[in-house]
Structures are given as structure tokens and as C-alpha cells.
Image (tube, one colour):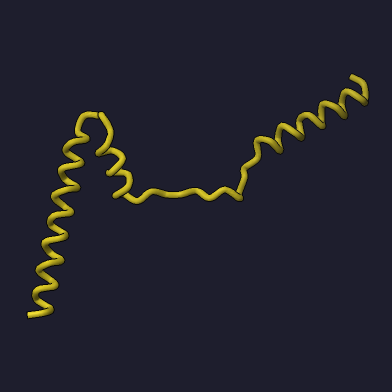
Length: 75
């Protein structure tokens, strides 16, 4: 292989490596468990309705507990 071929090959390899490099400037978002469950509840997979019902019951219980706490603070 000639020197010119080696230089061109090295340049192409360098460009390929730069193109495949990790970009640290993008922000990755991590979803909370609640967000993951909400996405799952909206899907068509088996058991999704149970996840939605569980989230609804948990929300109701949390709201009820908040009402009880508020009523005890302001008699």
C-alpha cells in the first residue's frame, strides 16, 4: 500500500471514530417510577389495566390521608 493510501485510510478511520464518539453535551433524562408506571398503564399489554387501577387507588388513598392530616391540624 502506498503512503497516500495509508494517509487516506487513517483519515477515514479517524472520521469514523469521531462520528461514533460519545456526545457528553446531551442530557439524559431518567424517568421516575411513577412515570414508568403511567406509560405502562396506557399501553395495550396484559396487566396494564391493573397497573392503572393500582395507581388510581394509591392516589385516592394519598388524597384521603392528606384530608385527614389537614383536618387534624385545623380542628
